[in-house]
Length: 167
Image 1 (cartoon, one colour):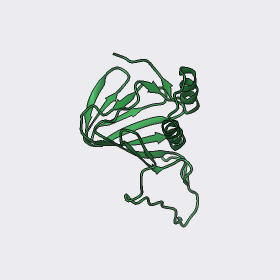
Image 2 (cartoon, one colour):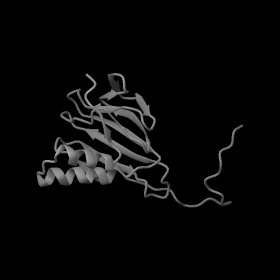
Image 3 (cartoon, one colour):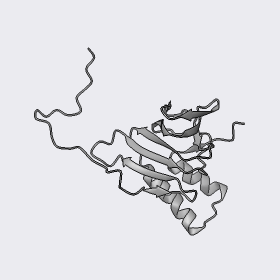
Image 4 (cartoon, helix red, strand yellow):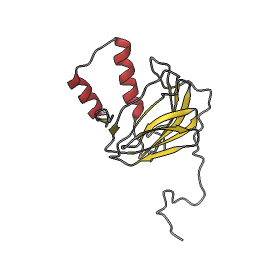
């Protein structure tokens, strides 16, 4: 049996669970109505992961091909059909499908189904995507138009290495 290095070395355990009721409002809402629920963030007691529920409206878009340098990203479709990109092709992923993308792996997602969809997004180690989405929301609310250079700087600052359209 392989044993990992203990993350907790106490002898009695501790009360440390974190509950997030489903009634909590989303942390992010796009102009198209997509809701981002920040279920676990890296500033919680366990910064080893971040977990988001991404409830996409029927008209939701998503990021084109891109990659991240600092974390792995795992997508688990929990309802509807999400269009995912695995670095080589776009495909429709129904509820229950999962796509794991190691750091550096090219990926993308969108909702092309015309119906609401939902997925979980797991980042390991944890990354503060809430700051990224808050910045996008501010830009949209202020009606600002960013130059290509400003978009490049924003994306680089938030570890989004955007690539061209693969088609």
